[in-house]
Every structure is written in structure tokens, then in C-alpha cells.
Length: 122
Length: 110
Image 1 (cartoon, rainbow over the protein chains, first blue to last red):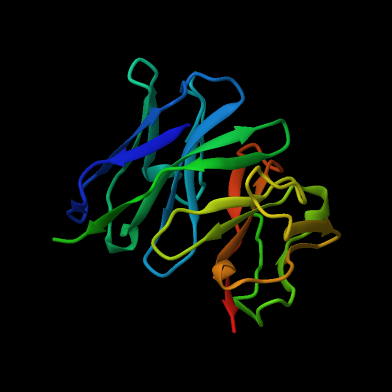
Image 2 (cartoon, each protein chain N blue to C red):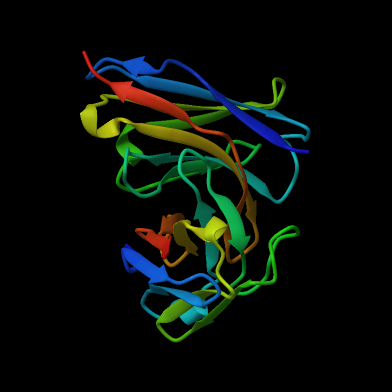
């Protein structure tokens, strides 16, 4: 059974960089047809896609966050990571890592991590 | 950017049918996926490609998609169906395709 687990600091200061890692177990991050992504959910609000990466390093980012986001992959560790720079209180959210099944015309999120709360505060 | 519109809330009595809509410009030309999220938990895929169900999802969950509206239908609603539901598409209309979520609908079982 595929499992995804987020890890990283739960508290980040304003203007600093939020860094999270997702460790994939029970399957290979290098599997074809799958992208790996980050999604966040501010407290009491809806889901927001941050971006996705293929094992080869190809990335797609949410246009509204693109200038602050970097997603990278480490196939040797079966991990992928998120960096979000210049954070503010508006970036406080539960951050989920996920697997996306990608075809030519759609992407389905079929596995999710449990999520990790990141609070931006001084 | 592509926008998906969901009603904030839907209420239904146990045993009745709940219908949750997801509106978008010509959404019928896209594949729509639906997720259920219970409090404190990660979302779970309940319908994909408009109307297919992942293994383990009850047949009570079904979907349709035509024109400018996609619909998630939950038949014979149970108390355990109370949750937030989100629709999602992949917008590939630009050079920078991306995942789009609806704003979510809170299903209340009366």
C-alpha cells in the first residue's frame, strides 16, 4: 500500500522560507504516469493546489504561487520537497503531499499524505 | 484562470439523495473528480473521470457531467457521509496546465 508522509518544521517566521519533504513508501517515485504534488488548506478553508513534479524533474506550479515556489525530487531517497519563500500569515495551512495519476487530459489525486500544519508566526 | 463553483452547503435527511453541483465554463469537456474530506482527515477520492468509482467506494456515490455543470450524487445518504466535498479538474487550456479545485460543499445530514 502506497504511503506518503510529510515532514518539516511546524512553525516558520514571516519572510522566511517554508521547507517540507514528502517521503514515499510502498512504491517508487520513479513510476511512469504519476506526478507528485503539494496541496494546502488554510484553517477552515478549501483546498489549494501548489504544484507538481515528475520524477524526471518536470514541474507545474500554481500561477498565483509560482514566483515563490520550488518543488524538487530526490529519486534516490524516494522523496520530493517543497520550498515556499517569503512566507506570511496567509501561508498558514495544513500542507498535504499527494500522488497524481496523470493522463494526457487530466490528473487525478489518488493518494494523499496525512497533512502537516505549518504556522507562520514570529 | 479556470474557476469551479460549488454551493457552500447542502443539507439532506438520512435515506434521501444528495446532489452537489460543480459549475464551470464548458466543464462537460473536462474530466471531473470528487473528493470527500471529513474533519481532521485528508481528502479521499470518491469519484473520478466524471462517474467512475475507486475500489472501496460504495455504489451510492455516482457522478455526471454535462454542459456547464458536473454533479456528485449520493443516494441513500447516511450519517457517515457528512463531510466536505470538493470537485477538481485539470486545466490544460494554457501553456501552464494546473490543478483546479472547487471551493467545497459542506454536506449536512439532518
